[in-house]
Image (cartoon, rainbow, N blue to C red; front, side, top):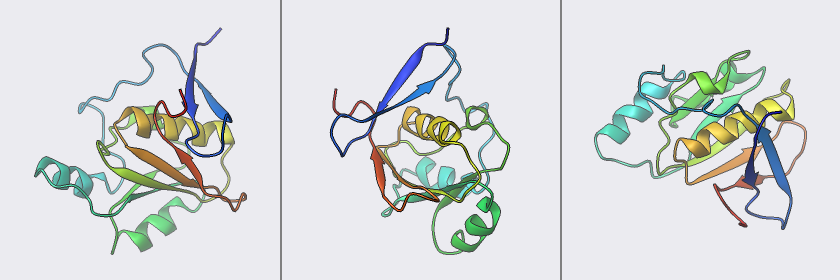
Length: 144
């Protein structure tokens, strides 16, 4: 049986999304590759600067189209379709993230990415699901 790591939804009471992970599955090291568009974000953070707005992160079937369009004016990251978010180094430490799910993903796949972003140090991950119409907010350890 796999251990369960809770990610608590910050707003909305006692709803909890659970992500099943293998022990040690997430290891945020710089030996991993950066996600697409991650170099710009990483350089900013390495220079001791912090984004003034949320970092946009895209996942799903329209990832490339959306990330390409927004990267011209916004700090962006994206999870390429079919890739495992555990395989990337997410440069989001002490940053807010706005995650756009562009369709075609199972909720478990989105939860894995949320988990990775929070473990990488994101202060908050706000999620705009493709078919939900509601903004979901996740904070590491919220509502403990």
